[in-house]
Length: 100
Image (cartoon, rainbow, N blue to C red):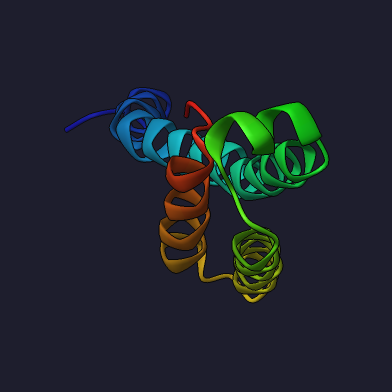
């Protein structure tokens, strides 16, 4: 039988993998969550660059569509639906020729 001090040490060692997993989850979630607003910024920036729009042959109707996609992606992000948000934002980025 272990003495109380050794028993605590063993319990602490057993907790390390769980604590590491929790830390990874928290840091990954935070980084992942901030990704969507950066994508929205990239889309809106591209939409303000007339030279880029002309080069890509993007019409006013398409510009309106991509702006709406950016707004919808941001709304989904704020609602916590990051997968759907990222899907919409990446589609707009792809069509605008923005590297991800």
